[in-house]
Length: 599
Ligand code: ARG
Image 1 (cartoon, rainbow, N blue to C red):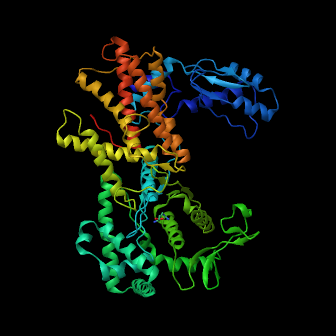
Image 2: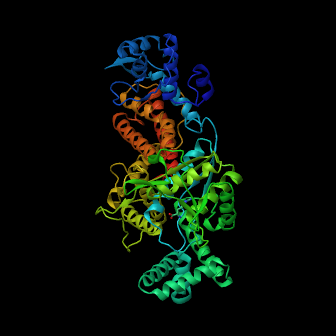
Image 3: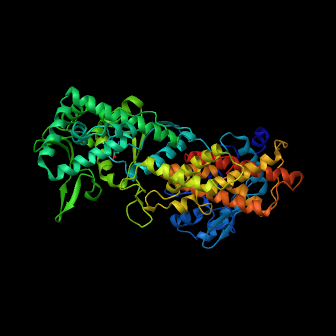
């Protein structure tokens, strides 16, 4: 494939754009050509057609502009359709209904763009207009506390968003803000000294630490003396007692070692593991600084951030409506007893990321229950002068098949490790029936499919919905699942395996059949899907795109013989198969999902 020639003869179809963007540029030009000055607030938006029978793309721009100019929308749409220059891109737009404009790209455009995308290592996905330094804060489990579904969702969503942002050219820094400091260590240290099972700790440290934590926690609820002992251990730790510091360090190390294994299995990595404890020394000075700068004030012995009075009460994260009036809801950054809190650490973390890493954006992938925390954090950080864009990328929870809290086979807490193990085990029973695989290959495939199924079940959901966790559904070969998508990929690979290298693809591509065209169209929308995800931090849009692509491929594969065709048709179909293969692999990769050549 020679990209050069294609790009030269069609200068507008350069790789850094999408059809949506090109069409909207041409639309702007059409308004200008009709001597219409766009009124303020006019949005020239182009979207995917809601029904492919009417075209590939559509726009309601004429309607929104007509409304602002107080003219007839249908008439304006007709004028724009006339002045619209579709040369080298699409047919003359059609006016529909009250003033919609429908666009249908020409088959030549699709063919030449397909060639350009295939020649591009990035498969036509445009780079971000401006590369930014973005910190993605995700996963962040707590040492010696059970990992919950929130951490699982955060891990998969965060990893995928980081991959996507990197893919479009941002400088991404992933940071695992581990909860490695806090009151739980009073209980853990007390438990360590009184009831730790050394053997169990060696075997599965996280599990044993959590067991001890839960045990002490439960006992503390009914036994005041235990509570007191825990408090004493905590104070000793905070004051730098050597023995307790040693125990704390060991707990963190054991947990991190095991987490590394889990992340390794999941093919997830972090540039940094700057847990909460990393900021300990910064907390005192931070509070003093905030007091000096009047960003915080003393109230009943504690140091608090209050409303700055610049927002409407409904939008002010430091106010709450209680008993018929707006009451202060401060962010406490130092308790009356001198202790610091989660929010104090997060404020110090923002300072660090901005000052040391020059972060221009920080994305926090954390469950919806922490919404208030982040609103307060962002507001307080703004007051500290940080211009950084900060986003709380929230998500809902995961429910079990019964609609209640999600549990694994082994018990109450959902460990990420248990989930993966069970997924791989279940995938293995499916793969076990396959013929022509060695045992080693079988377990490799099971590992890929199992992990893929769990990740995809997560990432194909809108992040704000509470979704039901169903092993059967996620491992099914039918429907919007990882096995279905990987199977589509496997099919494309088997075609080329059959050819055994005995083919050279050329850019002699001519689209004739509807199914060929539909598949080409989908393939060319990869870049749009990638950018849609980043627009709203929603990996499920990419999942949906890949599912639609796989469906278009199945449709094509049924309607159009590939290996039995000849000449240009054969070349065209093989190019489509090759492109499908690459987009599926790349797209799944951006969700953090690996593919396998056979299954
Ligand atoms: N460890 C926290 C939790 O389990 C999540 C931390 C999220 N990141 C942050 N910078 N606050 O709830």
